View (cartoon, rainbow, N blue to C red):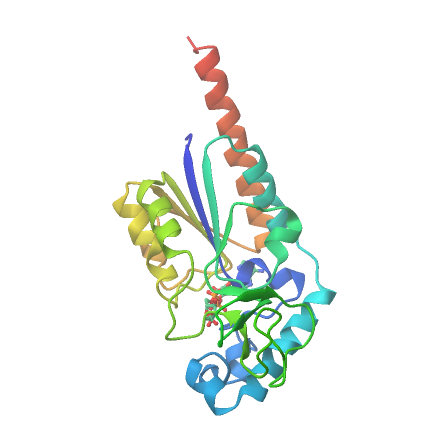
Length: 246
Ligand code: OAD
């Protein structure tokens, strides 16, 4: 099969083998901390220091991790694939861009970005954030938060993502449990567009029956192999266009 417009969705499973905890696997982040305390606007209003501490630890953790073979394979796909391409990630880590991905939408925000609640400006943020942090734009103290999308907030880049889903002919969901909307509904939007839909995950996700195809295994093994086969099929299709087979 040959494709012209690809949308990829990734979740925590793509970064798991880099050493970043997933959310809902046993021992995952939400088994250790209540999401209502650290991933809702209400939790931040109740105890901003606790929320800063949670994301500071995760931001520091990023200093110790590297992109894995799955991130690299997706960057290679973007570089080699000739059609339209969008990589949508629910992850707030920077491993896709470290691997070389550029056509990338962080729908749940980024841990290395801060948002000022006073002036609305976003800034790159590499160190810890505290209740006394100052906005580099408006200089207000104490109104900075991590620029991640919390439960109850609207994910980012939805116009761009929905436009890409409405015209994609291949949708691939990688390393996500399919528990969180709107991302969990992307497969149905891609199906409505007539796309071929594929799930690559360790195990069947919540929405597994919506996909046309599935491959189960570790992301570092199944994603590079999937990309290799996809690009080989693209080369075959291009060759057939130049030299029609008898
Ligand atoms: P989850 O933790 O819910 O799901 C991770 C999925 O990855 C599971 O289905 C695992 O089976 C799979 N997985 C684990 N290790 C894997 C590996 N080595 N290779 C392939 N797959 C693997 O994480 P997400 O679906 O990303 O949002 O969670 C979605 C959102 O829920 C997150 O963005 C976050 C969370 O609450 C917010 O915080 C707003």
